[in-house]
Amino acid sequence: MSDDWSNRLGVLGATIRRQRQLAQMSLRQLAELAQVSNPYLSQIERGLHEPSVRVVRSIAKALNVSAEELLGDAGMLDDDAASEPVSSSTEDAIQADAALTDEQKDSLVSVYRAYRAANGAV
Image 1 (cartoon, helix red, strand yellow):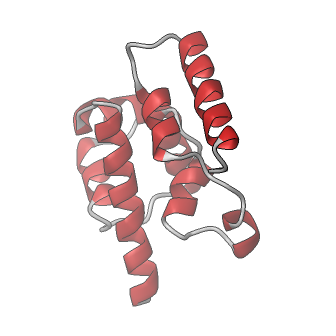
Image 2 (spheres, helix red, strand yellow; image 1 turned 30 degrees about the horizontal axis):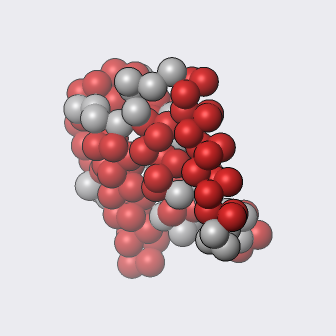
């Protein structure tokens, strides 16, 4: 495995850990929701294991983010896919907030995007 790919696995793991923490989930909770073992998820978060596409999708679904976002943040998508915008961490935090209903999340994201567009920060 090349050093570049190892680094990307480390970034993927750190991204998953950051999203898990934003969602205020323990490693055990995320492992259960994603239907993977605790040790395996820990190895992924530490960049020691390359997860399959199915596992990445399962983790992303449990975190309420897209698999493309996780992979894009880690630089693991091709240039065409990586050039597409990914959600900001503000939007991720809104989506991860378990205290909000889906309707409230959608409303907050809409207001946030409108604010950014009105202030030239798109």
